[in-house]
Length: 310
Ligand SMILES: Cc1cc2nc3c(=O)[nH]c(=O)nc-3n(C[C@H](O)[C@H](O)[C@H](O)COP(=O)(O)OP(=O)(O)OC[C@H]3O[C@@H](n4cnc5c(N)ncnc54)[C@H](O)[C@@H]3O)c2cc1C
Image (cartoon, rainbow, N blue to C red; front, side):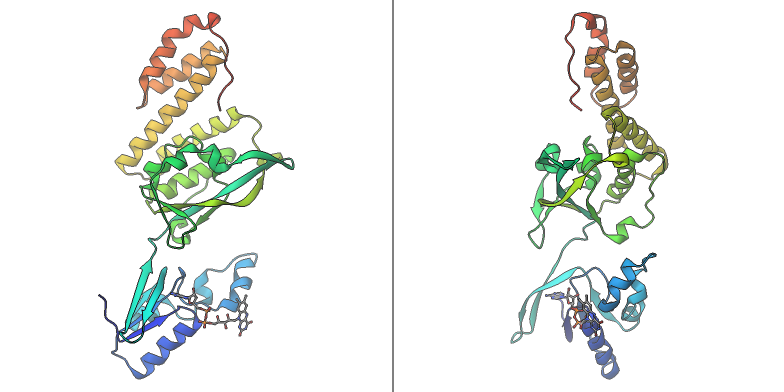
């Protein structure tokens, strides 16, 4: 049990002022300020103006008191923490802290040219349903109970559902986007974020409607897969990964070549199928499929054609 002389619930301007008041009269008493938000107390009325400006201001610019102030005055500031119970007679409070969620992504209805497409984004990514999760503190999201790189990095459907995500600012700091890889640029960014290991959650309710059109849409699936493959290689060369993460990434690269080989095999493009299956063999992963299909190439003329599954 943690003991404090003063517990202040709510890290808004009011809470900050109480801290100042206490320190005016009591320099030594132990103080804890608990706030459900991720930021130290800020001036709420200035929020809209500062965030909707052409060049949004960092939240520190509208802070009521800086983090340094709390540190200097020995005030135990607990952010992202909720006080769920208070028993005044016994001087007890229960605090609940959500692990620092790195980001969450929302389930989306998909529409194209005004038409609603069947299924939500979660229906398109069965892997999400298989991941071990627990309800979030508020009960509105499912927190993935795995390292996000291991959980989501291997998922080949990634770029499709990255259109509505909420990132904690601290997770984004230092992350890069990349020009020239338009359809998969989210993947470049998101793999960097996964690599930081911050807990991830998904919101299992339909929140947003997304419409892809014009420059925002893909002209064909080859275009997406080319960009995905190039992006994965760029992540491999550009981003600092742990050995475990790199092993996952290399397997994913092998899988991407395999999928490409499969696609060209069943559309009877023997040269490209051969090229991609050979590429797949250079990476870790299931090699059996690549060898089997390479051995079957001479049989292509008598095999049926199949529609690509992606
Ligand atoms: C859009 C908007 C515009 C405004 N404009 C003006 C203006 O122009 N001029 C003006 O004077 N006032 C304005 N106000 C009002 C002003 O923002 C409030 O009066 C002021 O923020 C109140 O401060 P507070 O610290 O008491 O509460 P809040 O700022 O509401 O802070 C309370 C904090 O406590 C946290 N909290 C609540 N319950 C718990 C719990 N159980 N555990 C942990 N944390 C908890 C909340 O998450 C919140 O961060 C505006 C408010 C809004 C929303």
